[in-house]
Image (cartoon, rainbow, N blue to C red):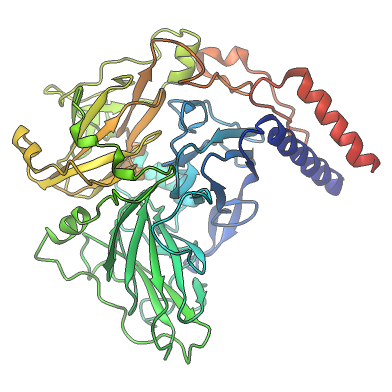
Length: 594
C-alpha cells in the first residue's frame, strides 16, 4: 500500500511538472518536490527534533537560471501551518507566491500546495526557509542558486565547482520551546553552537567540543578555484567567516556582482548571502579549518559557540590541528566591521542578468519621492506582552492576508498608516502598512537604537545600500551617501547605535514584507509591509491570483477542503481548467500503457 501511494505521488508530480513545462513553454521550468517533516538529528551531539525536507537537513539546493519558471510542490507533514519564503528572490509581479503570512494563507498540516513563480532578470546566491512560527530555528532551509544565461558573460572564469555553505547559530531546544520562551517575555539566551551545513564543529579543542559530533568536510583539488556561496541562515547572531590560510575573493552578494576584493575574513549577518572565489593554492601539509564564529559578543563567554568545518585537499598530508585562525582583532575599534561593509561595492562594469552593465541604472540621479525613517528600540511591554517595534508599532499579522483582502475588498484587514517618522507616543500593536507609490523612489533609513546587531530585509526587491554611520541619522547624513556604486542587495546590516540608508525603486507591484531577519525580534512584531498598487489594473504589472490560492480569515468559507487521505493533491496554477485535466489524463494513460 505504501509503495502504491509513493508511486502515485511520484507519478502525479511528474505529470504536473511535465504539463507545466508545456504550459510555460516560453522559458524553461525547474521542478522540485519538497516534503516537510520532523526527524531526529544530533548536530551538536544531543538528539533533538529538526525540520527536514525529503528526510534531509538542510534541504536540497534549488538550482535555476535567469528567467526560469520554478515549480516547488510542498507537502506539509508538520503538525502546524507552513509557508516557504524565497529570501531575496525578486518575484516580478507575483507577491502571491512570496510565502509570508501578510501575503499568503498558510499551508495546513497534511496539505499539499504548489509554488509556481519565475525568477526574472536575476542571478546570484540566496536561500529559502519556512517563515512561520519560528520554524527556521529548527531547519527547513536550503540554498537557492540562479545561474546566468550562457549568452551573458560573467566577470570571472568558470569555477571548478560551486559549493553551498549554510552557516547559522543553533539551539538544542526546538522552535516550539524557543517560541514559548519568547511568549513568556524572556530572551533566548546564548545559542548552543554554530552549524555549518547542518553539522556541528570539528573537534579542534577536546575541552570545548565533545566527541562524536559530525562535522562538514569540503573536498577540493589543489590549484583549482571554487565558487563558495555562504549564507547566514541562523536565528540572530552575526558570524565571521574565514578559511585558514586562504583568501576570500568576494565576487557576488544576493544577486549583484561586486568589485572583486580579497578578504581574510568577512562578517556575514543574519539573512545575508555572499559568494567567494577561493583558489586552492596552499601546500596541503594538512587540512585547513573553515570557521564561522560569533561577532559582537563577549568572546570568552562564546568560545564554545563556534562553527568549524574542514577544507580537505585531495593530496592533504594530515588532519587540521592547532588553534583556529584568529577573528578580527577589533574589540576596541568598532568601526572595523562597518568599514569592511562600506568596502563592498557594486561592479558597475559587469553585466548582471542582462547584457547591459549593472551601473547603467544610475540610482544616484533619481529624485527621491518618499522618505521613511524607521527606528527600532529595545523590546517593550504592550498590553502585558513583550513586543518588538519598528517606529513604535509592533506588527500584528492579519487574519486575512493583505493581498487577498485587497483582491476581495475585505474591509478593516489592515491600515495604510505606517508613519514616515517614529511615533512620539506610547508603542502600539497594529497591522500598519506602508503605502508605497508605484514607480516611486523610496529612501529608507534604518535607525538601530538597540545594543545588538540587526539586519533588515525587503521581499520582492533589491535595494541600494548608500550609507552607514554611527549615531543618529540627520538630513546632513545624506552628504555621506554613495550615489555611484553602492551595492544592490536584499538584506543589509544595521550596527548597534547606528543607521543604514537604502534606496528602493518601487517598480514591483504587490504586497512586500519589510522585516528584521533576527528571528526573535521578527517573531515579536518587528516588521511591516510595503503595498504597491498600479492604478491601471492589468496583468502586465501584476500576475492574476493563482487558481490554487488558499483562503483563510474572512474568506475561509471559500476554501475547498483538501483530501489529505491521498498521497498528494493535484493543484494547477495559471488557469489550466479542463484542458489541464485532459492533458494530464492522456499522459497518465500513456505512461501506464507504454
